[in-house]
Image (tube, rainbow, N blue to C red; front, side, top):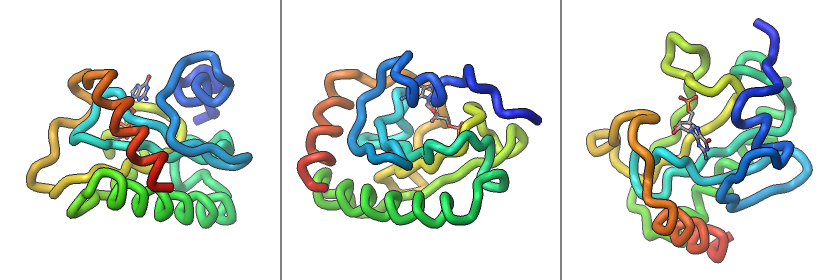
Length: 137
Ligand code: 5GP
């Protein structure tokens, strides 16, 4: 399958759609999930146009996971998260809904996770969580 450059995350990367960002550098963007499965649900995406983890060049995957760890530490410190679920869905069969590779960091226990990509979160609450994560970076 060819990469669709009109997917939501490609449009966020180009600044065509808004996002509540917590971290950005030349290779990676981290922003809040608008339908959080738990408070503080954050997405980390490489800027490389790849659909799934399997399509992502190894060096980009290696760099992105370092940023995933950096954001996880900020979530722990900034939000006082006791545990963080790292989720990565590759392929529609696995439940992937946005065809640009991304890593979910969900401060929660797997037993308490809300339904995936189901209910819009409260924007003001999400913005407040993003500020706490940013200040802990
Ligand atoms: P996937 O199902 O592909 O693993 O995850 C996609 C995630 O993106 C879901 O958790 C969903 O809530 C989130 N999402 C969908 N549309 C948007 C959007 O426009 N902005 C943001 N920030 N998150 C989105």
